[in-house]
Amino acid sequence: MMEVFVTKTPISAKDMKVRKLRPEDIELMQEWLQHPHVHQYFGNPEEWLEEITENIDAEWVKYFIAETGKPIGFLQYYETDKAPEGEWSAEPAGTVGIDYLIADKENLGKGYGSEIIRLLIELIKTTGKYKYIIADPVPQNQASARVLEKNGFAIKENGFYFLNLAE
Image (tube, rainbow, N blue to C red):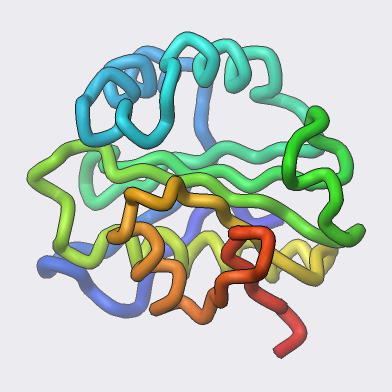
């Protein structure tokens, strides 16, 4: 699996890179999860930090940091059939779920979310292991829903946004 990607399309005159999350990034994640625009959608920061810390080297979940000269966001993908039981457990084999955030409020609305999703889709495709991607933004997060739709996701009856990688 490739660890770093550089976008071909500049955003705000800067290229974006996605790299694997490292243990030293946990402190940064703790800060980001406290931001009101993140906390309202991600919930309890301590639960997220515990999950990431416990699973940082797990095979079923991969964590990443997006950078544009400095860290600006977090993204992850997880195998729905190997993750702890949840709404995603009923998804077909070969499905990964994704989560993502833009860390600082001043970076919202600049296209970084769309670029993060585009890079995450490419990263998942390069593994050659998965058929589908799902995302489940909270209904109030309309910006996230628009980013997913812009990247080819469609909403399913169960409320998940769904992308078929074979299409």
